[in-house]
Amino acid sequence: MHLLKLESVSRDFDVSRPWLNRVIEREPRRILRAVDRVSFEVSKGETLALVGESGCGKSTVARLIAGLYAPSEGRIEFLGRRLQMIFQDPYASLNPRWRVRKIIAEPMMFLDGGKPIGELLVQVGLSPDDAERYPHEFSGGQRQRISIARALAGEPELLICDEPTSALDVSVQAQILNLMADLQERLGLTYLFISHNLAVVSLVADRVGVMYLGRIVELAPAAQLFAKPRHPYTRMLLDALPDLGMTGKSRTPVAGEVPNPLAPPAGCPFHPRCPHANDRCRVETPKFLNGVACHAVDEGRI
Amino acid sequence: MILEVKDLTVQFPTRRGALTAVDSISFSIAPGEVLGVVGESGAGKSITGLAVIGLLEPPGRIAAGEVRLEGRRIDSLRHEEMRRIRGRKIGVIFQDPLTSLNPLYTIGQQLEETILTHLPLNRNQARERALALLREVGIPAPEARYGAYPHHFSGGMRQRVVIALALAAEPRLLIADEPTTALDVSIQAQIIALIKRLAGERGAAVMLITHDMGVIAETAQRVAVMYAGRVVEIGPVRDVIHSPQHPYTVGLMGSIPRLGSQAKRLVQIDGAMPRLNAIPPGCAFNPRCPRRFERCVAERPHLLSAGTSRAACWLHASS
Figure 1 (spheres, helix red, strand yellow):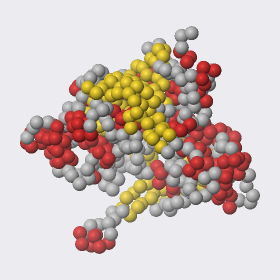
Figure 2 (cartoon, one colour):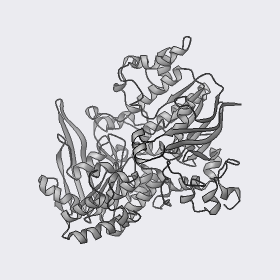
Figure 3 (cartoon, helix red, strand yellow):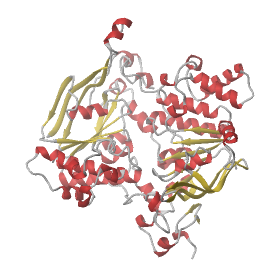
Figure 4 (cartoon, chains in turn purple, cyan):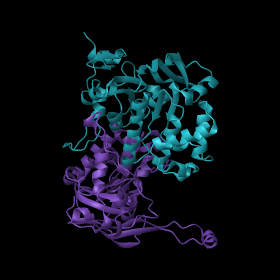
């Protein structure tokens, strides 16, 4: 039974220059398609991770689900009652003028009652006395704990975590990831986990969706995706990852960069960097079939 | 040795007394060697780098110790002299390429200017050299990009330009402070391959400062682990990663998520690194250390030999 379902969701942004410039310089409108026909389901109690490089649209998907943006096309279905979001930057996401008590209590406005603040703080590893302090008195890791406590205060079924540990040091990241795993087990939470860090994703995710230029190019159970990546882009990402075990060996550097999303390549958006691209890839956009969007995989070439 | 740092101490005077950001650390780097300096934010790794190149922001100052470049002491040099050495003998790469590039000049102008300042070449030769450098760092069609401004380039391309700038005068020492942190993984791999190749081919010494152990594992031969302004462990990369000797390094290595690991939880070091004004007596790590005993609270450990590495931990004191 799914808790969240996206059906062919797209989101366009108008990044045209001002009207006068367009008229004088005879420029057309410019539309950026940040998310392009993304579909997936998230079941209750699981963790689905979306990974990809900067600009691939993963954060836009998070914001679409949270309702911060409306989809331009497609449909988002959420069968729970409440969802909450945890953001990347714990310095920007807490109001510096509010005491922790007020920050955490904010989502409770929409509940009858709610848990005591002290209990929520203890749940994330802080002390009940911290409620009277201000955000600047806390370190980055503690602030992220406050963000989690605030999210939990709303008693959500789904937590959308947008790079929740990317701004933290590794030892603090470990504390937060462990905390999130404990909370999921204890409260039966469902996570949508957005990250660029494949190693973190391999630790937390049950299933993983890989995004490239606004599309999901591969979606598979985590164990399968990391053991047998199918899409050439997924393989490239895994190859590019520094590996602590193989000291001294060099990884395969990948050629090229993510193309400009304003002028995505025709056909498969990955074809200019793909070692397996052929004429079909340059013309025809691959459909998402059996968990992967790639002509080469579909034809059995790789 | 190209770089020798001995008992370097950096302090920031404040109204409530001096804060010690870097506390008598020593290391050296040989020609062609990459030394990784790893640690969490606030450990003092960037300050160490800035102290070596004489770019500490006042009121920060070198309170003790010495820095030698090819045997010559450079920490006591006057500003003007140090400026000539930087650029000529020391190349620097920072995390954000835009801090090293002037937005008002084309990258060609910036490269030419740097080359003319430091090398006895005329303008045409400088241009030739600039183009060769751009080609070397992997910028396609350098002739076409020569007149472009920094904002025309993507993040990865800008970092390549910065590397070309840093290498313009064939420096003996390259200081790279988080050179790949702002970049995507695929670009990261390209930049690392580049730095590694340059160290190997030109015999420069490289000090690679990063919080990313993965980057160190791939690039460095030796690694220094910093904690609260001190070097807690230094040794060959392979040994530090596979058999860390200091309890902090053990915790740090365990807290890094790895692909293919079956564990669902990470090793966790509770607590956080102390602030500079609250560094505990004895070993700075002792309040968080699972293996602490009396001596750790009373007496500060110096680097002791521990296998092929050296670790600042009383566990390695020969009794």
